[in-house]
Length: 197
Image 1 (cartoon, rainbow, N blue to C red):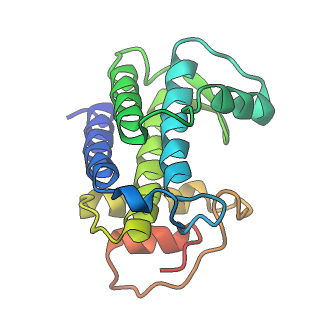
Image 2: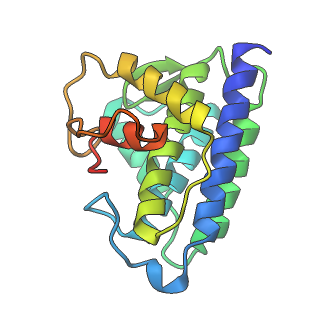
């Protein structure tokens, strides 16, 4: 199977597992805290939704300038307060999966928080985002995530390379936290990006 097809299949599986977590949030949990101190559960899921929508917009031809432009685009496509958070998330995931499935997407380049990157890289970014924020959502709501261990392991290895020389920022990837070497890959991934496991 070609590398892009594998990456797309991994994203689809991560999206499905994250959707199950979103569907499992109880009504009284939406305003509860998460491992991301600045967000409650609703804001966390909306963050993932707006990220999905932002990259779908980029694939449709939006060309923001730098980080400021990206932040403005993300704010413009963010869910409204009266939107159903789960249904809005589901639709954003379906939209992004359609975008990623376009044969021209992998080889084109798009603005990301890490600069201009290929579509292939964007798919891996969104897979990482789904795993990390899926861990956050599971922790916040007392659920057991069903992300495939192999995908979490592979994503952790990729982030070791991507973040090797980058300074850590608590607003993004914080300082690596200690996690037992025999912990599940998802926990080790969470610790690597700054979560206290």
